[in-house]
Image (tube, rainbow, N blue to C red; front, side, top):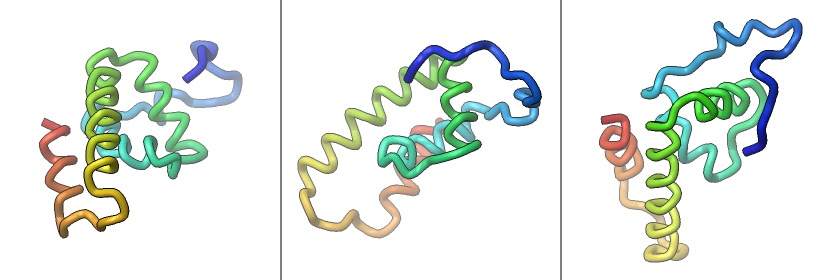
Length: 90
């Protein structure tokens, strides 16, 4: 994640701000590089401003790597991703 200017000309940054709960729900898409466009920018903007979510994202990275290492090509059990998201959202 690079450093960006505080605001961009012509953009309404306030309307794209995410809550911490919304940000956490996007972490796994972000880690899988499945998040693009405005949702990606909104998450990165939130992460630039929120140290708590940066810590949660770091934990999510470690958890994602651990699960992928342990499961290999095995599919996740039904509903596990939703349960993890709820726990991370706090």
